[in-house]
Length: 481
Image (cartoon, rainbow, N blue to C red; front, side):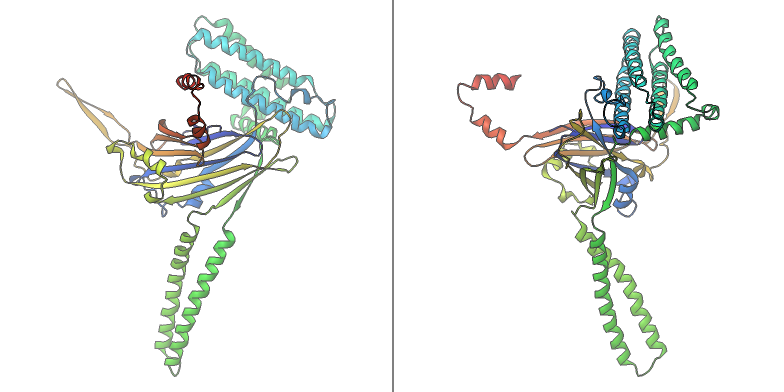
């Protein structure tokens, strides 16, 4: 079982990612413990509203061989394979370059020593230039295919330039590394000159940062065609909700008609009193019908899946995977014992009144095999916490301190903590991890992984118990290792 990875995405969002094999399945449960003082409840943040606005799923082909080039590099030649496959192979090649470059840039920025930093940056620049050269080696003569090549070439050239400019801007000081820095700048100038030579972008677009950035975002989505799976979201309880609403209306209307007939028989003719009584009866019908429908619906819906994502290949339209999703507020008694134990490990001062929100995802890969060179797909789930901070207070005041005989003060901000437990797997193999998310009104300050537990399959336990005396030393040595 591949363990999921949780990381911060943007200021107020984080993502959960994991890889899956053909015909694989994965279950993820997230339990949010949200302090009551944050003002989050079913009346202020409905589950359906939060799901559609702030929870996004993304699924695409994945290869961990980022520096092999690139599983599809030999297919981007027009002379190999059919022309209808050219766009897909080109997109897979371009997408893999972007993923590899982003990963390497992120790792390089973690290096703080200037000498090691620029050494790694130069190696990365050399690899990037080689990959771009390989891409441009197979320029299609067919005009129908040349537009696909120009879009990919334009975007990758721009993305490489922006990546290395970012690397130089955020990297350590360049004292003593003038030559290395100049080589990196030469690559950026070369790519800029290449795009101008091929007239990929108009002068008006180049002079407007917003236009050039938005154009490149569009080109990025174009090269994801066939690589990132098309997602279709379906509601699983629409017909059931209609049935509940219709049944409650039928029962209420039958009761109201009985009252109306009894009231009509009590009056010999239409009077003001009869009209007033009928008005009261129909008014009560409107009040109790909606309340009763909502009450019954929440009881029926509790614990049931609400949505389903269907992921399909954009080119072949073949179904790749299904994802079934739950999202609901729960009570403390609904927490699994393992999750409750992790929540109880918090310090006493952190055990404040909280609202529990449960998210569940059952992901099943239905495809028996993927494209050549790809053994896995990668799924990412993005959670935006912006709705959580909507009711938070601005600022927090000032902190005063005494410095000798002088009183000083400094501004402080109000921060909040959301405890979350991530549970992966089923009864046979279970992995749990607790996270503490610290945030304010504008950003997530920190995501800290705390104590976790792991439950292994029962079969493995039985095998360990049946270890023979001759195998005991080896087993003991393996355990110590």
